[in-house]
Image 1 (tube, rainbow, N blue to C red):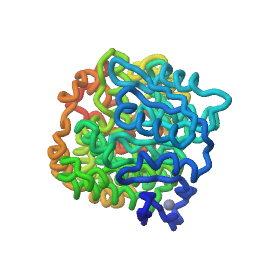
Image 2: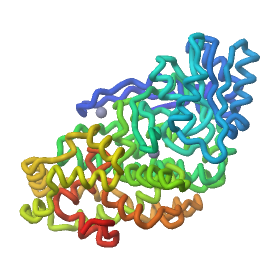
Image 3: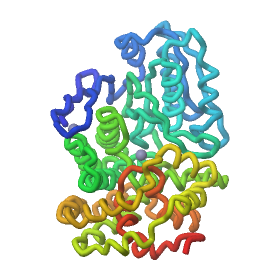
Length: 453
Ligand SMILES: [Zn+2]
Ligand SMILES: [Zn+2]
């Protein structure tokens, strides 16, 4: 996928030419990356004709680093701005309270929303934009995740992590000087979110081989580009130079733009995200501070990484079908398992959202046979993954957290996440392959499943 930057900083993405079977949506949003952009935000908004009356959403920190300046620029340009600055003791969570605060700041007069922040601020604004039908503008303050261009909002609803359909901002503004003020752990988090794409990519390819899931080569190419940008600029990113910040934010946007193109997060999130989200959800429930999103994605990526090469080395052509079906859970056992792993409310919610995730015996057998028939293709997809040292080097350069222990993930949650990461959604991943083929137990022998023997 080709893209270039206009003189005003706007990134222009060419429409993908592709016959993969996915419906492709053009990237028709205005995405700006550059220096000294905050003072131009009023012009960017005027150019898009979004109106003059807005709610500006930020938290204490993001208001200080960029929100105040945007607020002033808008007021000076004649806009009416209602600030919604959320005050929290610790980190802002994208929860019921935050979503409600934004909603109550909106009036009949509001014409658009503008978020100034990274993940949580953007997502609470995004869901409100979707529910009110108002357009929104996102001013990024940290290159910490790829969600700026997303059309789904990960939120916390009564303590359960949920994904809700939402909308992409009409305008995204990423000022390199602002991004460079982001603390190093946030930068490392962005890098971790990008590194997770290695898993998302290979899992998508496995889904296409096993389940004939459409896999878009144009999006895969964008993932490769994003990964190369981060791997090749690790030093600059760690030094938070302009060049480094540009490489990282463009990598995140490039990966994120695939969400706009195909309308879902298939290209950017797989089992590494499920595991990370499990930690986040469960740690919040226990009153613990979870690791930053991308930081846990990076660590979860390292955890599942060895399974791919190990699977590719199995005599897949000789898979034992009886053994594969031997450990099958009945529907009632699975319901029990889901409640045990995700809690009463979480388990019920996931099962309601992904009813197709319970496979009947016929479907499981079909998948196992497909693994046997197309083992060569599976191995070829896995063979494209780099050596794990490539990831380790990049993460060390960022001084990133490398283990779940460094992230203070409780041992029982860690073990559980390795088992139930595959069950968080029906999206196909190697962990599902392992489970369906009866291999998961052996692979997870280092993580004996809590209360499950
Ligand atoms: Zn992510
Ligand atoms: Zn395509």
